[in-house]
Image (cartoon, rainbow, N blue to C red; front, top):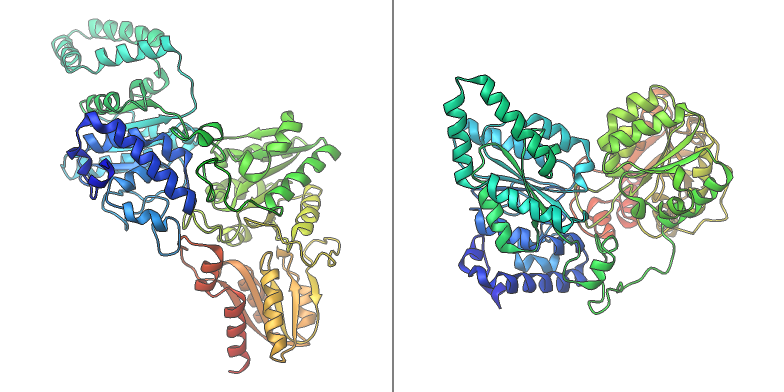
Length: 616
């Protein structure tokens, strides 16, 4: 097999280009087989195989730099840089990351995981290169989806006057290019990027610089012609040379385009058209489902372990549809995650009250604020780690005006295999610092429904944060009405009081059972509200409990535990506080159960810490 010849960076150059189509086929088979076992990002990687091969064939890694926007399409890059064996532990604890990691390979030039960052990072690398007087290529690979993020345009605005080579690859896997436009694009590319043309253009301008009127006339005529015939003029008008579109599955054509792009002494965009899921029929038919997939059966694409119970996203979906039916002021907003967050059904039923803002969380939040001033009830469904991109908008545009915007915070807490960039472990801290914000976390699926209904009818900013995965359906007999700032006592005894936030209530049940087996009295309380905390209950419970144990799946700094401890200290209550939280660190990839154990927030570890505290 050709793939057997690739064991380290640069080995692809030893393979004749005539054999690249066979190599691409082998790479796809390898990725499909490996990801079917481990899970991971499949469709995006299958679409970028030839593009990655072409980049590796032309560039000199690790001297040259590739920045993969988001990074979920970098599997072929990992394969071509000597990490073949790592795919057996892909996204597993202690194994290979599903995203580029500088600590994993010197061919990974920038750690990514979130969208729209690659052009900014690439421009910074170009500046560093030029300041040091060095000579190497910098290439940012960005998808058409990532171009919906404002950061990409901020960066493009900043590079408009660049007078040194910088290549941007636009990996377009959705746009349909007609034959006529494609043919004209290829023809004009061959003319505009041919070395003879570039030399002629510079020679003509050099000869005519003394006659500015003639030069200006030529430039106006040239620009008018390009406006009529050259695709990508929006980029040209930003000062970026546009090449394309190029067939993203024609390795020879891609190699030619990248070589030509390297000759341009300014920012140049190569528009590459690819097919998401290329080479695997289930992924081609359902690219969204195979974007980030669980392990599946290769022959048919069916998940190996299909879900048998509803997850929190299913519950959210059902509740949102009911809220939409009851109140025509409810508007659902997503940042390119309609499927992931569970808003697809709402979109289908109420298309006029559904808005996909694209990968633009900042815009989505301020857009929601504007909706709220118009008397509507916006619900922004967003992953926890993506919401943090809009910190300023939440603070200034929503909280400052005390507007009734609901933040449905999905994937809150540990999310597992996607690792540091996706763990939702900071939202309680950054939202908790904001005046007028109210934060809730449900213990089970029933409470998620109740909290969403409460939030939609509350006159102020609210956040409901819930985890990824199967929705807990235990403790359904405990369903007291939601009251602002009030907790929910579940089991009340004395001595030790477990104050658990959201998904930690289920773990709290296990902790309580362990302690009860050892003859220790223990109360279990569902905190419900992280802001405001139920100070009345804490004050009252301090009379019968010597130890409060706060439990949250959030970093310790700025979390629920700090708030409880501060209240106990300020009021000099006769009890101590043990805060169980995630250490103030980034958390690697791995299964949620494994990560909880490693972080000391699983039931057994928590019980051990409590026992040590009690017997001190």
